[in-house]
Length: 299
Ligand SMILES: C[S@@+](CC[C@H](N)C(=O)[O-])C[C@H]1O[C@@H](n2cnc3c(N)ncnc32)[C@H](O)[C@@H]1O
Image (spheres, protein in one colour):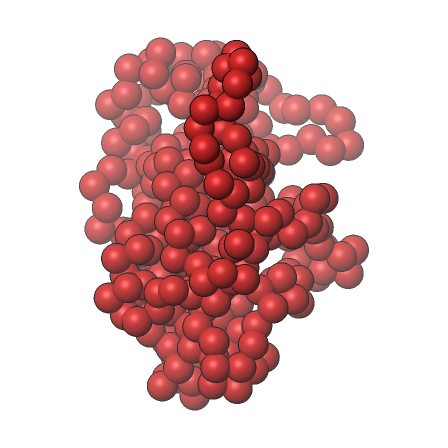
């Protein structure tokens, strides 16, 4: 969704942008190419992705700073690197195609590999740790909460009985056997939701989103734009709630009879309806089919 992002950020010459999830640098490349003298700070915990971004953006090397870190440290990083206040911030959430397609990273149930799923391969907890050491009730909760999987308890029990599970294909088989094939035209693989849940838990993705959005708004200049691309309803709900709260002039609980919070809106919501990819984009990049863009502007 490159054109929508460039349009949403309103990229202008000589301005500074923070790409909080730079990945392989696709969006950053487009930002740099769209205007003269633009500078971009790119952040990602994935060293392999950053190396690809570095190579790809070589011709713009004097206009980029790439930092291997998490965007939950955006305030500190942006200020330390001279990118705060920023004219625009981008968050393209979740997992990249590179990560999904690299079997050794363990994100995909269709690619045999170690059960890993860490965005930062030096991170503390792998998916195998979670699968093999979490109590069955807790595992069921993770699968239910982060995968929105109705059959979470049955799946968690099957996993517990099959421990130790160390490979992606082994886990996919255990799940498929426990719940059987999903029928229907739009049927997804029975392991899809559990893999999503484990990935979210391993990387604390939802906690990071909530924290990162608040900081991203704070580092924007007045008139600066925050563009967020989310890929599933859990993420999009968080983005919607955070934007509503930041745009509101009252954050008192509904039971409070008279407003006492003196909350001042920090942003204006730019698009009341989410922006979705075009049909052509979905045809060329099927992963974009669930993408939703929300944009706010700092006041
Ligand atoms: C959808 S991809 C982004 C792709 C990128 N926009 C591009 O054009 O190549 C998401 C990226 O966000 C990174 N990521 C996930 N959580 C992060 C976090 N808390 N801080 C920084 N990056 C994160 C992942 O490692 C992944 O590379």
